[in-house]
Length: 315
Image 1 (cartoon, rainbow, N blue to C red):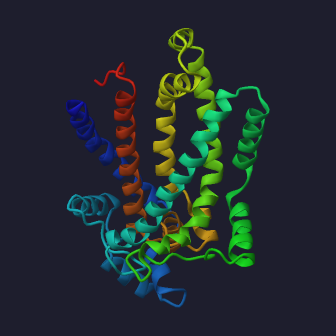
Image 2: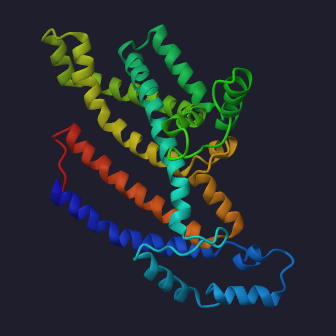
Image 3: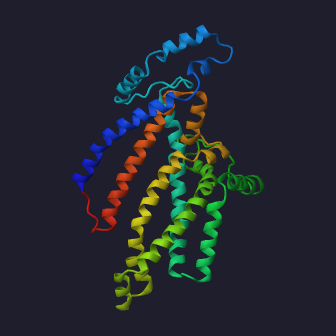
């Protein structure tokens, strides 16, 4: 497994280089001049040209790429055009919110999605199964912005139990109690994702229940609960593991709607704002970090396959 992990880490290098080229080219194809956006509508063409020269935007695109790549290999993604601070500091500011939000959402997904999916599979065809399946389809189809607004209305406005927006860092006054700002957003994100996990766990367990080793375990007279957990659920987890991994990555990078509804300073919202501001360094830095995240999670999922099922061969 160590040899396989080392080979996969080496394989990340050419993939990241290819991703960096694509990201750099696509970002620079976005219409608009960062210098003009930064200076505003009142700037003269001479002022825009002068700032573009200072930012190196007047050089050929391949020259800009190699300069940027050289700094990026040293961990320097440049300086934000809008914030005038290092890109990594800008990303770190949004990463705390996005990572904590994704972790809290995953807790809700596991608490809600896995037990309901197991219960639905073990009681296949019953009213419990029908209710769980119908509820899963309902929440999977509900728009997150609609659900978020109603959660704010009920739990923040009417009941006053939770804050409606913003997120002070856990390093600020309040510490871990500031996580209460993320409870409503995490529930908003968890609802459709937990619904998908319910359906996936149910379908995976129903497939495993048809296999020979499960019938053999039942024929030996093992307790139904032991058969369901040890022989069915564990094998069904192999297909669910990939969903957990990529759901976590998606929660960090694609939660822009929820972050906007709850005014959270997360990574998804940062990307959208940076695109509108033509903040090339931030866009490039965030996308490359997200690419790295997906690659690492993909590696972890592959290793999880071998841990869950020793029959899986890693080469």
